Length: 139
Image (cartoon, rainbow, N blue to C red):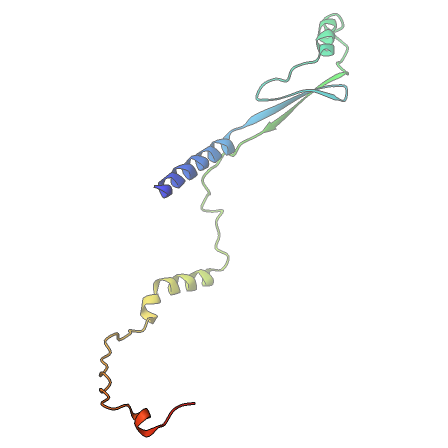
């Protein structure tokens, strides 16, 4: 039960990871002078009051450039390819891989057979206690 829940949670987290790694988004920031006014993700940043006054006066003065306000857009692109191409993958030491595969698949040939059927005779029954009979004790 617990293992099934863990697998469901892990698969959900991996699906969300793939979704966010392939999605592109932009971060828009609006500065009025050196002061950060607004920062927004995937939508335009809110403009300051000075920017709206300048945009109205801009229609009157088409040649003037907006020097006070500054808009910055940072584009974060997602991953395009999810599958690793076979030309990108190289084995560094093929001799090591061959030795590993050989030892992994041929471990049964190196095993020794253990004989588990060992017959032992039971000890003889003692009719007398020899230590007390001969008065010989371990000290």
